[in-house]
Amino acid sequence: MKIAVVGTGNVARKNYLPFLARQNDVDLIYQNRTREKAVACADEFGGEAVDTVGELVARDPDAVMILTRETDRYDAAMAVLTHSPRRVFFEKPLVALGGQANVTEDDFLKGREVMRCARDVGAETAMVFNYRFFDQTLAARRIVEERGFGPAYQVTGLVHYACWSHCIDLVRMFTGRVTEMMALTGKSLHKSVGMEAPDVTASFLTDEGASGAIIGTSGLDFKYPVFELTFGFAGGRISFRGLDGEMEVLDHAKQSHERYMISRQTSRWDQYNASFEKAVGAYLDSIRQGTPPPVPGMAGLEELQFEAALRRSSREGRTVDVQSEFPLD
Image (cartoon, rainbow, N blue to C red; front, top):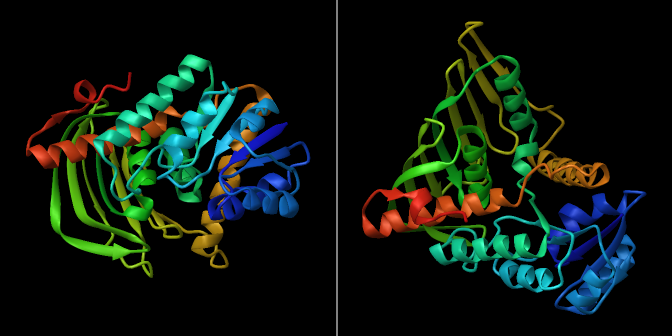
């Protein structure tokens, strides 16, 4: 299997290439705007560095992973799709020209353009969204299914912008597509891990009958959980917090209150790194087996749709009809 990597910065080197290099059936090809960085990856992880995107796709890779910074991802994606690859895998968020704390309506439009271009050239698309592969998330999905919790009716969230697109994706995964949105933007700026942006808060309804509210902020201290999500289902309630926090389950049928925690020997960053390995491993397996990707590329566009609706609602002071004002296609 040939896997091509566009963008060989810190994200690729820390979160992807160590795992990819351990796969016996994977050959790696690299392209980076600064050629020396691509060559350095080839030296460290094995594989071949090429000068241009055209050369990279001409090697006929099974998938192209676009791992650039989110501010550069649109240009990188359009350059790759010009050469009609078979599959494209995106880091998150799909497009964010001003950074992930400042997604705009234009980012949604550019993301939709990327998805349309991929469709037109016949390229299958996938997203990382590795928070779906945290132990808490996997356990929550299993409990909902096995215990017949039924549909989600409510969701609340407090989320650091470093986790923002991931948590919006989790809300979408558990509750359905957002249909109506009302949002406000705060006046105070918080600065954390290079992200400076005011708080935002959004209330919304989904097509599966859920109502929700979520706050995005850079004001959460990284010494503590960087997100908290609570989902209310017909048959119970599930809450989980942070990269290593406990998960709480209230089961109506069993009349039980349960807590799930990762091993005391596991740090938040162990869990974070492991989630990338599980996410990328699941994607590679989908290629080997010829099945759809575990997280489709459309999930990235739906996340941008949520953010675009939030920005318009806050700016215009009204409820936004999300699906009609920001159609996915």
